[in-house]
Figure: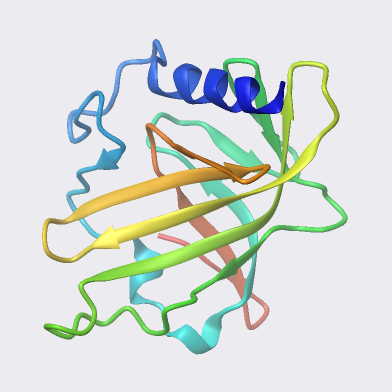
Length: 164
């Protein structure tokens, strides 16, 4: 049942009726960004970092006060336990032959399908230096689903909010 729900979520995310931003290629799970995401310019020692908001180019917002609905799926945050951003590959500075892309993991999200019990989920964000593409996937219950839009994040680093 949950596998069917994840497949339904993938269809709902990819078949969104909202008009994509001009920089987005419909049908692909890559956001062709005019500028690289701001988190790629942050040093790895700033992570792990609490995430206060995830802002999507289609004006969707996920935070302690706002959940996002994608078809029958709802992505939310437990206000008492904010999500955490991790930079598993270290600094994102491009080094030819060594660092062709940059990854960020957002752990601690909650995903709910229709009336089923909520499950823990996470987002994987990847910026490619070679082709200036921004890919993102949502992972829930061992399933990974490409998302139509990739977010920017607002992080709490050293007592201050860091955002684009």
